[in-house]
Image (cartoon, rainbow, N blue to C red; front, side, top):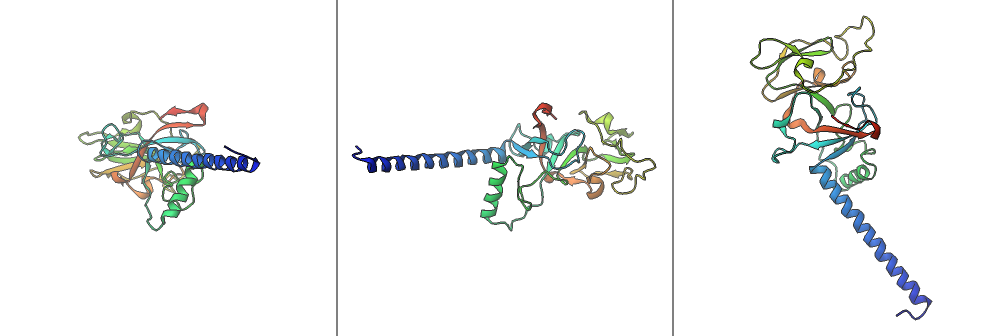
Length: 241
């Protein structure tokens, strides 16, 4: 039992210290649970590119389902469909030490992925990170006037991507200057090529000015890091993709 004001002050300090310690433990536990969830179940990402307009704009936030090869019911290589919007795994650098990794994770956590150090190896969505899967393994493809033409394995005729892809999407090609040469910069016309058994041809919806497989070529399935399945911000335009 406290006998004087000094005892009361001491007890108050001890109580405040215990409350502060409980708060720190709670924050750490929430941080740990969220990081585990973001790593294995669902990831929020802040879009910082105009590569996918008009469907996704700079400043949108999306949820990504990470690729999980050995977990049935989750997004994996076998479930990649034509028309999916996916993210790519960046080339990972292992030069960062554990302190830098924790710092990067804390920045991403407390800013809801809006602020990540520039050299973060966890920064996935960027000008080189978010695309639509249009060409699938075994396809023969070419582009004409920014539209992809596809001949699927076993078929004899080429069809436009709109005739084959099951998902609805629009392309941002309406503001091409008059007399624009479609072979300059990011090409609007390409030669015929056939994709190998593990090749995916990725394109941006903003076909005029975005870098995609027309420049860096098809990618292998191991580079696909997850599928973008929902835009949740701005809240008034939230929708499944």
